[in-house]
Image (tube, rainbow, N blue to C red; front, side):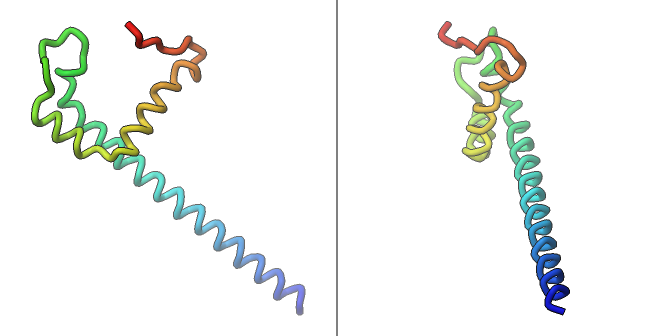
Length: 97
């Protein structure tokens, strides 16, 4: 009987752990989708950031889009982008020019 109670307790603990992992994964996916959506809104800034354009300063629409992007989303995207060359076995970017 004690063995059965122990087995039921372990099963419930395992089920709780699986539930917590599922909730964490769902939260991460929702955050990722929200971040991607916020970054897509920055397309209005393309005339300012694409080399060879004549825009000296960003538009108000661009600034509003940038202001609406979560700080963590923006910074994580920059960090990931900076790591891409090494993950693709390419030399690191040199932006000193």
